[in-house]
Length: 319
Ligand SMILES: NC(=O)c1ccc[n+]([C@@H]2O[C@H](COP(=O)([O-])OP(=O)(O)OC[C@H]3O[C@@H](n4cnc5c(N)ncnc54)[C@H](OP(=O)(O)O)[C@@H]3O)[C@@H](O)[C@H]2O)c1
Image (tube, protein in one colour):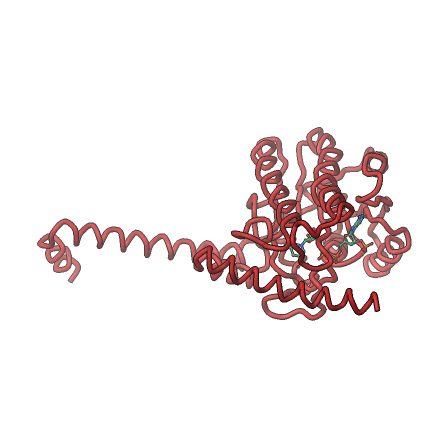
C-alpha cells in the first residue's frame, strides 16, 4: 500500500509533489504545536521554586492576582516580602497567610508606587538585605477607571500609569537583581497583559503601551541573564476576575485569582513569555486567526460600550 502510494506520487507533476510536501509539513507543524501545548499546559512538572531561594517578593499583594500569588507561594513553603501601599491591608493579608501557613515568615514594606518611588525602592532594598530572595513577582499595576480617548487621560492618571506600571516594575527589578546575581539564581516574573501584545487596545492606549514595555523589558532581560542562572518571564493574562477588570465572578474564560495564580506558578522558570491559564490560550488562537482590521473594529466597539457605562456612572455620582 505504502509503495503503491509512492509509485503513484512519482508519476505526479512537480507542483502536485510540492503541494503534497507543503501540506504534509503544515500538518506535522500543527500536530507538533498541539502536542507541545498539551505538554506545557497539562503534563510538564512545575519547577521547585525553593531552588531559586527561600524568599519571594510580591508587589501589590493586598488584592487580586498579587494576593493569590502571595498565598500560593506561602503554600509552596516560601517566605514572603510583601510590598503594598496600605499598612492595614498588608497586615490583614500577612495575618491571613500566617493563620493558614503558620511557618511562613513575612516582612512587609509600605510603598505607594505612585508616590515617592525612590524612597520606596530604598525601603525595599533595606528589607531584602541579606535575604535569600529567589523569586520576584512584579505584579503591581493599574489601569484606567474605564476606557477613554487619549486626549481625555488627565495628567495625574497618565503619570501614575507610567510610574506604577513601568517605573515600578523597572526599579524593583533593578533593586533585586544584584542579590540574585551574587547567588547565581533567581526567577523574575513580570505581570504584563494581553493588552500589551494584541494588535490594538483602543481607549486603553497608555495602559496597553506600559504593558508592551513590560513585555519587551522582560524578554530582553531573559536573554541577558539566562546564562547567569536568572529566569525572567513576562506573563500575559487575558481577563482575570479582579477589581481592576471590574469582573466579580469567574467563569471558564475568566479565572478566579486563585485559578490564575495556580496556573501561573507552574510556568515560572520556563518560557520568556507565557499565558499561564490554558483557556486563555484558546482565545489567543481565535484572536490570532481574525484579520487585524476586524479585531481592531471589534475591540473599539467593545471599549466604547464600557466607556459609555463608565461615563454614565460618573455623571450619576456628580448628580
Ligand atoms: N485582572 C485582569 O484582568 C488583568 C489582566 C491582565 C493583566 N493584569 C495585570 O495583573 C496585575 C494585577 O492586577 P489585578 O487585576 O490583580 O489588580 P487589582 O485587583 O486592582 O490589584 C492591584 C494590586 O496592586 C496594588 N496597587 C495598585 N496601585 C498601587 C500603588 N500605587 N502602590 C502600591 N500598590 C498599588 C493594589 O493595592 P490596594 O489593595 O491597596 O488597592 C493591589 O494590591 C496588574 O499588573 C495588571 O495590569 C490584570
